[in-house]
Length: 319
Image 1 (tube, rainbow, N blue to C red):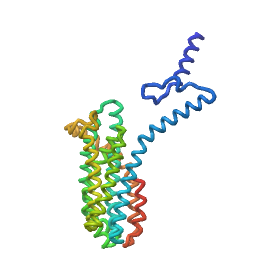
Image 2 (image 1 turned 180 degrees about the vertical axis):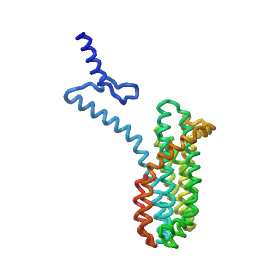
Image 3 (image 1 turned 90 degrees about the vertical axis):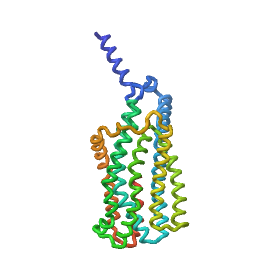
Image 4 (image 1 turned 120 degrees about the vertical axis):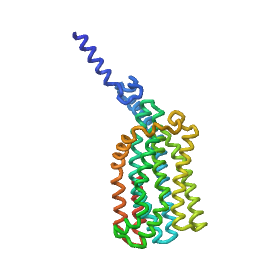
């Protein structure tokens, strides 16, 4: 009996040395044995270094993509400043309040895809990842349609919040031109999550880098060279965001994700209501932060809008 007890205790001690997060059901015994002296410290240091490298492979491209996306807004604000203070304020409030209203909600709704695609990838049901992305497209496109009144009646909404008639009218006109940008969110956000769950963040980073260069060139052409004014500023953002989506979708459709993308399927329409509920819950979690930012902009009623451009820096928290 004592021998059996000793054996059981030995087995329990051995089980305690097994790593819980190993992808193959358990860590190697040598990795978790207690080692005295400098050997244990060197092993720990090597493991920390290895895990840090794996983390930065995922994080660094994602950080670059977010910074590039924010830089597009900064470039847009900079070119708008050359048109005048009122134009800068109109672009700022249209981009941050009106567009930001839908941006925060749809970004949060697209985050539901991270959970589902992560589960499908872990279960090796790779084809379901493409189905989930298409369902997310359907849900977010429907949400984008429901949010359209915010763009069409932006002037009236801004007047109700106490903004000046001149600023409200100009921001309302610009908001209508931002509708293509609004619909790009519904397609781009799920596509980015789809690639992220496959650890293909470098693809998004590369596309974002190209889009930034294109955005800078198009902004110079439309605003400085052709002098399209406020409409040109809206068109530059529309073009750059849709260019990013086009590059990423071309990568996926042309064989970049052979296991997870098998083309469009009618399966995407199955269980839509369950997907809507999950997406709505994810969107509500992120949306309040965006509403706080919008309140910051609406609190400044100065017609020349210098306070608006200062508040644009707060938009970095989304990226």
